[in-house]
Image 1: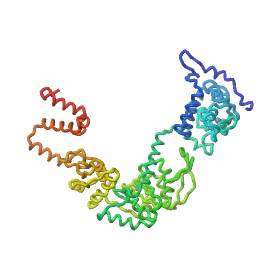
Image 2: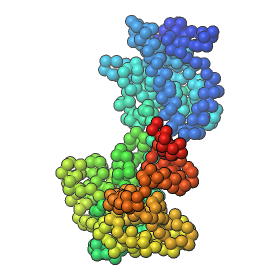
Image 3: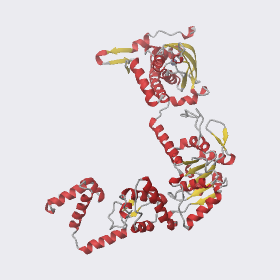
Image 4: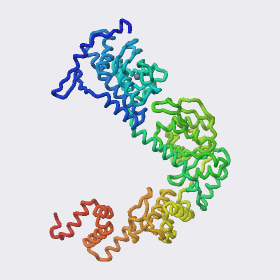
Length: 561
Ligand SMILES: [Zn+2]
């Protein structure tokens, strides 16, 4: 180190350090410190690496070092105010040594706080962390002084008032006899941005969530065609849609499937793929509404390692994975505008551009689907008009189930066979009453709603039994005709049915109190004495039910409490 960079005495810093064993505290100025065994830290470090992986461990340790560095920067201005800037800055390296991180030798330092300029290089000898890493992992390829580097970045960033990124040019963990670090504002490093995530808060849970979405999407692409890819239907409305699909199947035309939620657009898209000469190539489905907006471009178009914060590895997008086959974009109306622009480009040029990389040619047949009015979305500025024109070349409207009355029974039978196989049941088909109810329903939830009901029926019916109304609508006594609401959930009886029931009660002449007692007793019996279950059956809370039962037992004489 040249003359200018000689350390001033660290007596002022040593004075900050106070051991107060009686109170069980160690102080550095006003900050409480703790003495740790490096062996314990080494073990923690190793546990982190093996439980969350070295990338994530690196991030956690960098942030820990960063936090200490920032705290220590407070001492610089406090203890050396009025001294030359260099001496003030050297508080950091000197404290880092006092704290036992490494022997720090400044090699070069340039800084201009007003201009935000910093350029510095330091040598570290005997970094505890390089030693710890070598001890556990042997000689490695990548520098490993994560906590120490975090400290250097945190200290210098707090000192300079902007993010200064330190990197290890050489690290003892990689086999050299010392470490060598260099720091500059993050923007001055050509690859600086790819290091920013080490300093940012990041949730492992979010990452897991994103991964589980990916798994879900992948699973859906693996689902074999036989498990429902076949279309069932004979109604006029169905045949019309099917005919349009057949004509489009062996062309390259982009197909837009429209229709209400639950009509089975993915199944139609899959069928289109299977009818086409691309059937042997992949069918890749993406639900645009299910992916977080910030991940969607990377998901569709792929990402080059380091293209953005968190891009740890190069990954092919769905377009590339569907090469030669069909890409199905469900709920395309939910695509964010930047992704729309890229999609338009793919449609125009048949070229995709991974985030941070060059373009690649792809040969993909696009099938998009939407249940929103894209014209409306264009008017309100949420969807690009030029993209709509590109997508809307060959629209096919998938009819809602209520327009396919003739298909309800064949669909239900087909599903019965499929779910029976899935749940290992041999059943005697539907009862006539059950078919009647299915036929009469207006199916706001469409094919998906029918599917949910049939699967429930298959699960509830006993081996060898016929699927009856109570298997499809299990919570309601068969005397009451039940309906299903728009979510496919069982709904209360309709007002008309209420009226009929009330009329019957009044006609019977039964006292209301007795009726209540009987109803409650029935509910308790049906739930096998479980009061919470019984309360649910009659739409009460458990305390409400308990109160009423108690009142009945003690008699109405003292029932006015
Ligand atoms: Zn190192």
